[in-house]
Length: 102
Image 1 (cartoon, helix red, strand yellow):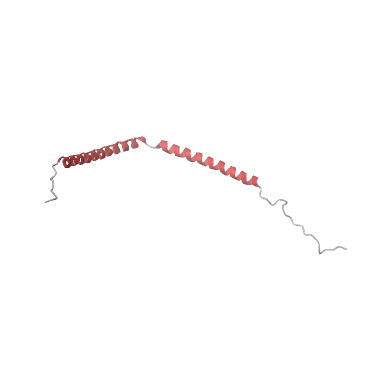
Image 2 (tube, helix red, strand yellow; image 1 turned 180 degrees about the vertical axis):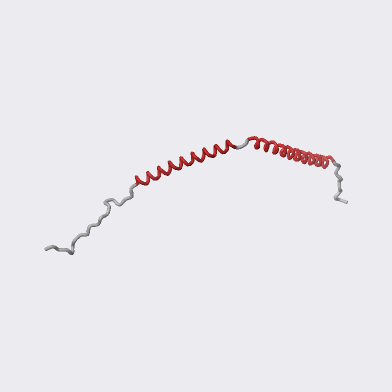
């Protein structure tokens, strides 16, 4: 005779329920490698695009801004020379002495 009420159920589980880190390290290494390749491609494309630009347009732009800067500097120097003349006039003008006792 067989007693069936104390029968142990068999569970089909893994012996070790921990996470396998080898799989995740492989994923991290592959993603890092793909990121490096993508950054090299991006840098190469950026380098090629900057080499295609026309440098004459940049040089002409520098000449135009150089003229503008020269006029701005001349205007500033003229302004400060006028201020210096006014201060000299104020310093050299005779002051009227007012007697406070009157």
